[in-house]
Image (tube, rainbow over all chains, first blue to last red; front, side, top):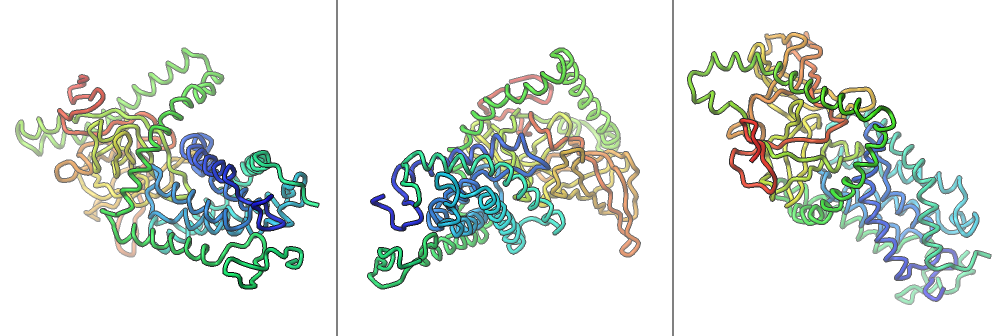
Length: 188
Length: 314
C-alpha cells in the first residue's frame, strides 16, 4: 500500500497497469473478431467499456479516463472502423469518469472490496448508455451517419442491455484479476 | 471525509486543495478531452488524406493477423452448431444447392441486361470488354458493430493480393460493396447497405438508370437489409421483381458494370413531387457474409490464385 495515495481507492502499480493494458488489447480482439458471432441485431457488447468500468470502479476516475481514452482510440483505429477517429475515445473517456465517481465507499461495499451487484450493474448500464449515446451524438454533430432517432435509440438500448449481460460476467472477473495481482488489505 | 486522509490535503504544488477520492486531476481530464477533440478535428478536416489514416494503417497492420488468426480458430467452433443441427451429408447438400441457387439467380438477373446490352452496343469491342472480370477471393474476418452506425467489414486480402481502394467487392450472389482502405494483408469494405453508400443502378428490363442508397440496416434476425432506388427518369415505374444491376463508373472504379444487386420489392410514388422510390431486396445476405471476391484488372499480380474471367485459376 506504499504507493496508494488515497485511503479508499487502491493505487495503480506497474503490474496492475501492465495487466490493464494487456486486458484492453485482448478486449479489442474479442470485440472485433469473436463477439460479432454472438451479436443480437448486429449490436456487439462493448468489452473495452466493461474493462474501463471495472478499472474505474476499483481505482477511480483518473486511471479509468486514461484507459478509456487509450481503448477508445484503439477502437477508432482498428480495421473495420470507418468513423471520425476520436469518437469512441471521447465516449469511453466520459464513461471512465462516470465509473470512477462510483468508486470509493460504494465501489468497495461488497465482499472482498468489490462493489455490490446493484451498484455494479447500475454503473455498467449508466456507463454503457452514456458512451453509446455520446458516440451517437458526436456522430450527429459531425454528420457522420444518416440515421434516424428511433433507430438510434433502439440500438443504444440493445447495446446497454448486452453490455449489462456481459458486464455481470466480465467486470467481476477483471476486478478479481486486479485483486489477485496485489491483494490489498480489506477495507475496515 | 477529508480529515480522515491527511495526506490528501497537500497536492503536488503544495497547496491545500483536498481532492476527493475517485475524482481526476482537472488538468489531466481537460487535456484528455482536448486530445479527443483535436483528433476528431484532424480526421475531419483531413478528409480523404487524413493524417489519422497513417495511424489507422499501423493499427490495421498489427491487428489484421490477430483477427485472421482468431477467425481461423473460431471457424471449427462455429461449425459445431451446424453439425449438431443436421448430418454432415445434409449440410454439404444444402451448401452445394445454395451455391447453385445463387449462381442460377445471378444468371437469371443478368439475362435481360445482357440481351439489351447486346442490342445496344455493336460489335466485338463491348462484348470483349463485358465478358467478365478477374476476381481475388477473400474471406470476411471482422464485422463492424451496429453501434458505429456504419456497415463495414474487414477481409483478409490487402495490397499483397493486388488490392487498392475503390475496387468492387462481390459475392457469389451479387454486389457486396467497395474497398475503402487497405493494409498489406487486410482491407476494409464499405457494404452497399451502409447509409453513406451510393451505387449507380440499372433496371435490367427497361435499362433505366438510377441511384441505390443504403439504409444502414444490416438485416439479420429475420429481417433482410434493404436498398432504396431513385430513378433518374421519374416517369418510369419499375415493376415488382425487376432485377437491378450496377451501371458502372468510369474505369470501373469504384463499381464495375453489370453486377447483379437485387430485385425490386415494392414501389412508392410521391404525389407531391411526382417521384418514384423503389425498395430493392439485395441478393446478398449481409448478415452471413463469408467468401467474397474483389474485382481486379485481369493479370494483376497477387499472393493467391486469381479467378480469371473465363473461370480458370491463375
